Image (cartoon, rainbow, N blue to C red; front, side, top):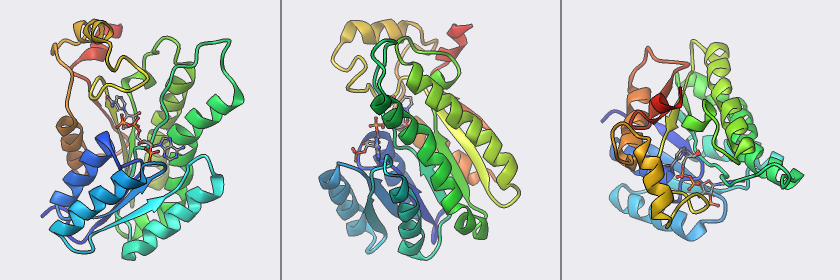
Length: 248
Ligand SMILES: NC(=O)c1ccc[n+]([C@@H]2O[C@H](COP(=O)([O-])OP(=O)(O)OC[C@H]3O[C@@H](n4cnc5c(N)ncnc54)[C@H](OP(=O)(O)O)[C@@H]3O)[C@@H](O)[C@H]2O)c1
């Protein structure tokens, strides 16, 4: 299997896309460190399922990425979990609208820290271990890193910074570590953005050339592609059904 003996840290992996990425890497032989913040039950349940398939192949670690010291502690514990680290997936993200006039420092911190500050400092703390394994970093980005979403200036800016982080770190950490990003479009509806609002969802779907939302499988496939292709770095792979084509 592609990832046998390798170890991967995935942030925010108890649910949704993070959990799908975790299952996929595990199916391909990787040992996992599943990070969570509040979703302890879901993280434990996922780890149990995967450990039942392969004994002692998954650990879980809790950290709030708003806590600066917790980020380096998370990196240390993740590296120690399997005495190596091959893959870091910066997936955790805070996403909610921040219309101008309503933005407070707490919104800046929640959105910037999870989407941008933590990916930088986690990458920095994991870099020595990743270097030893010719490892890979993947930042989960968004098409809204390249084209703005109304009322989401903080989120778009944080993802744009994380997108530049991918390119900057790809340059700086090469040749030992490859760094790439995935920019999903509408894959899973978020609670704070149109979940349960069929009209708003239809409006988004009408902008998508492929005329449907994506699924988590399409993201997991992109993760595997990035890990497997050893001549790829600094690249952002858009998985959006062509939606960004309609922004220009
Ligand atoms: N879903 C989509 O269609 C879509 C579209 C575009 C981009 N993306 C990107 O793809 C990635 C995954 O998307 P998703 O929708 O699956 O994510 P999500 O469910 O919105 O969030 C993933 C996890 O991030 C964690 N998190 C948030 N703030 C945190 C903090 N301060 N410290 C630690 N953990 C924190 C939460 O963990 P706990 O639950 O444990 O608290 C949450 O479960 C994200 O980076 C997102 O921006 C997704």
